Length: 185
Image 1 (tube, rainbow, N blue to C red):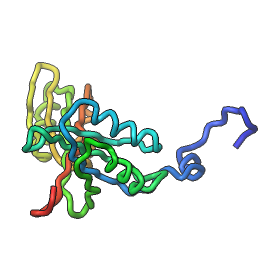
Image 2 (cartoon, helix red, strand yellow):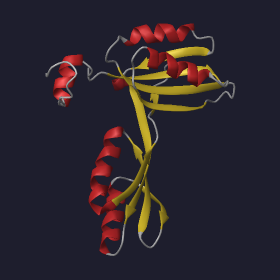
Image 3 (cartoon, rainbow, N blue to C red):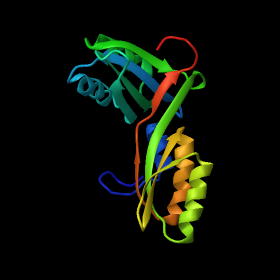
């Protein structure tokens, strides 16, 4: 490191070692809340104040229209996740929180890929789409929009396949998750 005030760049490895940011332990929190305005803002603010970066965030209604489910993915980096969940329980609109265990959880993401596809490249791309069990949702003369649903690794793998063809645009949802079996939601 240079003198104080110098702008010497650090590599990511040096930065991680200096700050201890990455634990590798991803937490998927399933939070049931009252379906009211402002609840998401209070929850996101709680994570921000404690130094957590929310990696993915998905919110939607449940089978009961009065209740919404928030699925948050965070890296339990700087602080233990227990501290945040205790604070979440104190929020008036929060009904239930679960830190889902990866082995006992089904997770999915949805992604849309707009890819340049002309001539022979189009047929190759459609073959890859079938391999990944994707769906073509739009076709123009110069591009194809493909929908891929699955685990994060599957989405990443398809993105790697799509890039050489000319990935024009990509949009991903946050992760949704549900515990396996008949257990509690």
